[in-house]
Every structure is written in C-alpha cells, then in structure tokens.
Length: 136
Image (cartoon, rainbow, N blue to C red; front, side):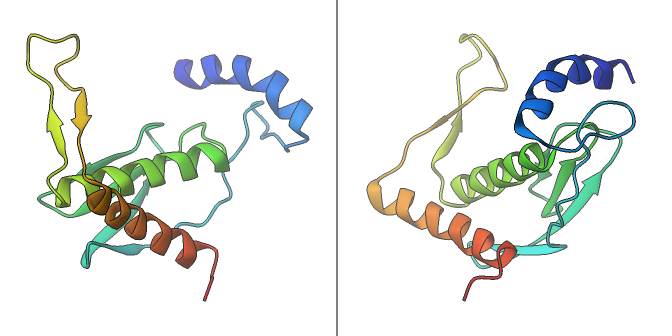
C-alpha cells in the first residue's frame, strides 16, 4: 500500500484537473478492458492482469504478458500494455539488445532498427490498437 500512497499524492492534482473519477483511496482506478490474447508477429501471446503489481512485464518463453494494474489509471494501463507489445515486437525482429554491463544500468536495452523493421513493429502495435478500438 505504501507504493499506492506515493502515487496518490502525485495523482490527486492531475486527476482533479483532468476531471477523471478517483477511487475511494484517491487514485484513479483502471476500467480499461484488455484482450486476453494478442498476436505479435503472427505468434499468440496470453495477456494477464496482475492487481498486485503496478509494473508490466513479459515472459518470452511462456509467451505471456503481465499487465500491472495496482494503482494504475487507464492511461497507465494502456501505456504499460503498449510498451510490452512494442518491446516483444522488437525482440521478435532482433532489434533489441542489452547494454554492456559496464554501462549505467544492466537491465537497460538499446533498440536499433532499419526503417522496414520499425514499420513492421508499428504494424504489430497498430493491429492491436485496432482490435482494442474495434476498428475495421
């Protein structure tokens, strides 16, 4: 709950100015519905919400995307989901690499792509956004 309280303080000013409804604890509750499965680079991925974490991650071996919903607004939920989709697409195309251990953060990544690879990655992302928005 301490992590939630830190977010509450930051969000109170933003959410009231934006006219967004807040939950009983003062933070915005995510109401966004995410798909249970998505296809990235024509491969199926399971999408799971995790209400005990606020961060989103993916497991490449299990082909599973975990979306943290704890204290997250719809905007933050969508941002976390799309971040993971884009990163999976980059991994699929071989354009994400880990920085060397000598650099600042060992868990930081570098993305290097040709224009075609970048366009293909955006096709994955826009396909999923289209499904969420029910675009034809």
